[in-house]
Image (cartoon, rainbow, N blue to C red; front, top):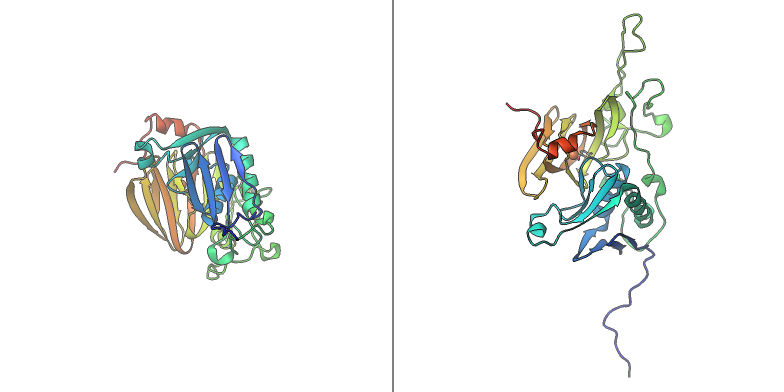
Length: 324
Ligand code: PHB
Ligand code: FE
């Protein structure tokens, strides 16, 4: 007599499990599974890896990186909170949320290893959906090259001597398929004699048209704490960014639709449709996610002043920058 086994034995898919504190992480062919005291969470693996890529590349970013409406991290600039349900009204009111604080470097190491181990050959978490292979299946190969891209940060301005260089065909930085109409001319600079080293200009549109990543702001010019971060956007921002300071958006081309929610509860606050030329200030107490139907250019204007999060959270500063 034979006995039927109703459940297939679990096949080893080749992915490493990870744990830090009381959180543990596992991946299978389609999903990331997160376990923590009192609960478990599940995310589609491609969405999880896209969010993880940003959290790692941006050093936990400004404020909160919500991977979705349940899981994410809060940057305290030295330590990081990792949470489930912390900014979800239903989890909070049922006391089902869980938070643990880590040294940023410890959590970063685990996140980096997880990203490396769980990303298969051909999948690029920074790329637009039409420009990458799939994330699914048993473990096959890796994509270290895509994961280790350096974040481009201009010290002063792209193109100045000793600063970030221009992007060129010769370096393999070709014009993106959706930006073939972007003029590649260079500005003429006519400085007064004696000021040649102090006047500079470059074609930011041409520079950005050659970006091979999406939803990844890179600093193109910087004055003290004022950082102009340009980025190419296509499809959807893989995180809900919870601000800890005001941040300005300048829509340089095309259109992005933003979902804006209360940062703590997730209650919907606004839909912001930004067309080329529009400028918006995102308040310090919200979270937002952008949708870009066509590849577009956005400038994110960040204030790097480290005293701001505390001043906003104490109420010294209003969460919005202007009153009309
Ligand atoms: C944001 O959260 O403000 C953000 C992040 C990535 C982008 C654009 C905006 O590409
Ligand atoms: Fe943001």
